[in-house]
Image 1 (cartoon, helix red, strand yellow):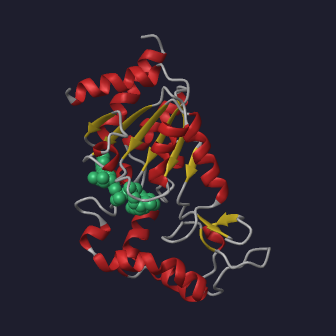
Image 2 (cartoon, protein in one colour):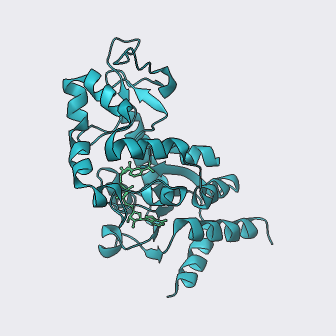
Length: 266
Ligand code: NAD
């Protein structure tokens, strides 16, 4: 099958679906200028030390929250450049296409691993930010969140009204996924009839288990469509029903435009 055949099939399935959801990863935001981690030009592909540091960040918060915050706000190193890129980035045609699919009533939810807030900025309303967002801070003790702008660099670390020490809402390695987020994502995986997976290497767990949750614990008619620059374990292990190879910023707008036409009866 050609890429065009696969797109035609995805359009027809999406237009006839009753509860389609999208799962997205860093790949959907690379066309907004935010590097991914593991793609050929990924932050960690180019800088192995940045990867090692990322694995230590949650323990740093637990052991010395003030130092954690000072480092997070310092803007130093590969990590600092990465967070700076997140703040200036704008949604691209891939994000806007998913928002369009929600507007026409086809896509019910986006569950993203991304922390950049670009789905919400593109107009998607039902968004689960599985790994949190750079726009917020969170109290691990009681789960409450508030805007990042409430952080005062001269008064670190920030405290919650419950007395807990707050961290970035972003979920670091070795940190548990917040319960509310995990519950909503698993629910969506069980009730969806189409899962459109876009721009993720599908190696970060428990997020990468959601397609299997949909296949093994969800509807028997589930169809899993993957749009990615390269095959992933989901493709290679046969979890994906069909794989559309290419850029999300090119493929998703094509899919959204065709679905919109079908829905408008054109
Ligand atoms: P990843 O870096 O592991 O994988 C990205 C995948 O997308 C790769 O397979 C790559 O080939 C593909 N890709 C890159 N550009 C693409 C494009 N334009 N079109 C289609 N495919 C493309 O990312 P991941 O699977 O999301 O896991 C990384 C973790 O890092 C996540 O937990 C996420 O929270 C975090 N992260 C977030 C951002 C962000 O918020 N934008 C950026 C980098 C990493």
